[in-house]
Image (cartoon, rainbow, N blue to C red):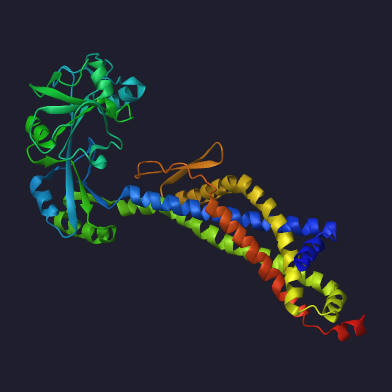
Length: 448
């Protein structure tokens, strides 16, 4: 106990030097903590992105994007061949169509064109202004309808969170004149579960009302794909298919097989491609954080090593006296380790406090820099800072958003920080103390 207490007291023998050492060490420890937090947070986000995107392949008719482009839709025959390919575990089909209020349906659109809608309509050649022999008329927004054979696949519906607020879901595998209607469209037309409306010249029953959290999607409705194919005279037609692969490791081979099977008929993208687009900036941050963490730990160890080397050299005579009165090399080494631990512990407390404060600003700066670099290289990423030190990165094609990268300090981080402090102190002090403890007392006394 006397050795430990003597080592702790020795840490305060020179207040100015102690303060300087603690301050410099605190910077190193705080940077190590920040990099550890960044490494842990980014890895968690990478895992989250990979798990959320999943192992899917999107198959769309070549040249068709929504209601734009041109070409032919895919057919049931095309997709049956895809479903029989190796590693394809499930396939969800979707068909999109739109109804004109007053012509194809008795529903009223819940969306108004506004300046954007009117501009798009004019650019499409259906002018809303008089002139050129065309009568002045008012453009009415069409009502979008989606047919699917599986309501559980969000990518087929383009709805990430389908919440049924009243009624119940229909059986998407059966041809029934049933529909799920968005909340805005239902409110506009006074519809509720059990109501009916006219579409495609027939009565369609409202099975339920859904809320997607998106105004555009809440202004449309969903039907079984077989029903929509029949009512819209598009038998066997499909505008999008979501292919689920049995393993993410087989995405590339499955995509190649689908491309070979469909040839130029389809545009094919995989969730792996979308994931890579999002993950690449995060992998860059992960690499920077890892090497910065190693550098910070090495810097801390070197600082305490040089400090203790200087201290033990100053105390050669003191060491000689201790050895002369019977102190062993181990006891002398422990005394200097205790002194080093005292200095490093104080620096650790200050460094951890600083690390908590600067962690998110530095993480935000890293994300901003990496996302900006990725965007300049054509990675399709843009970014914006969120108040409070968090970060939101927007990426094309992956749910449009990778949300809130925010460092959270847990007990595991504090434990790692404490271990880092101990390692830095022991490594930095034990070696010089052990080397200097080997001097002979007589030699020290003779030189001094």
